[in-house]
Length: 339
Image (cartoon, rainbow, N blue to C red; front, side):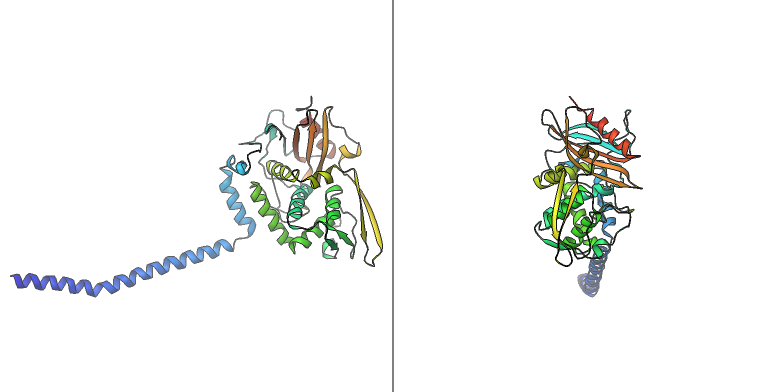
């Protein structure tokens, strides 16, 4: 009897020894399959187009709209934004008291809209971070390859002009040629520069924004929100050079032509507040801003201003139906803070 039990135990141990290598081999196959799966999953993510990956991240962060404003402690926090009873005739609008971190008025501030040339505020930020403002840039035909209806600074092929002057031409007269020259000089390609723009937008918490060019001409994957433009402008006005450009009544650039001849060009500020066509309400000083106009975006503007107590404000209006209505809307925003 005892011998029989010993034989059965030896038989079970022998069976286990037979199957052990098979079990180990099976486990290794499972591990290998998992590793291959993860490897291919990684490849799938890296093969996503940049805007697809960013849109996924934006959709996730959308449910954390308040959290995206916590990248800095001095931002105006806006949890949601709809259509108020006193809505303006515009696609979106806001005015924030950035001195007191107060939301004065908001209207559809998280709706994605075409920014037109207000895009160029982000172009400035990228240029200020990655560019050399004293660099002499040679204008090429590629830099001038733009929609014939584009607003331009008047640059010609072969011109040699300082990066700093390109920034003036871009912001003061909304020169798409200047914006394109900046983008290709710093980014190498339009796509390379747009990647830097999107990276900086993400760093600022502008998760509802995606750029594909430096000038703002219409593209279905080029969009932003009024709130994101506030974040972008708020970052830009921390740079004294940006404030100096948008507040300048005019600027004369001295540069060289293709044959080495001396050239100069004077640009004047492009807003109706700057040229005297429109006045802000009493007690409001408009420091400066950036306009934007295309058939898709309609009439847009971002503004930096102060009141009599030297409190600072950022205003954004997107998709006004006309230029007259744009300035009417801006003054309506100012009326909410005028003393």
